[in-house]
Length: 168
Image (cartoon, rainbow, N blue to C red; front, side, top):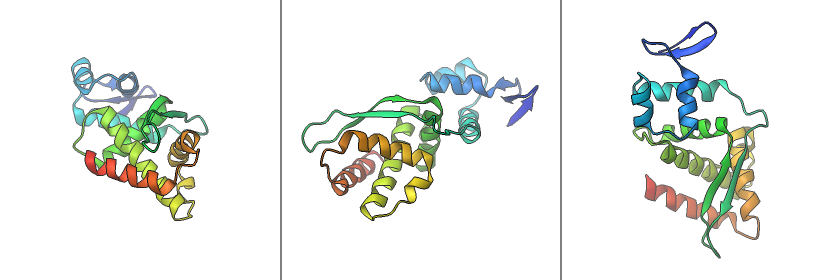
């Protein structure tokens, strides 16, 4: 359970600072490393991610850069840089769809794919609902910046849905 002590969020019986745990996630440390380094459970690590992802706002500071490493009609998006808070928020979002997964990179991938699918579904349906979510807007802008060279959004949506089903 997360508590506040001296204006600091802490978790567990030994009052481990929540930010220490999320900094390890941001530094791409493994779950095994984090649970050995800090006296916390896997569940508590995800509680920390949820807390910081919910508390922190992007307010225009969310940054995501991707590149298309595919060729021709083969689209392979690779994340080249991401802001810390967006990384946590996409892990949190991925956890909603893969509740048993513990690997942060796989949760990020799931959160990214689902966000992209939801954005592209809106675009294909001539809706702008995704623009109400800052996370979805950032993901869509990153995708659009690398695939705006005539790629059909319906084709891209179909590709992402196929990849998502394979990884489920």
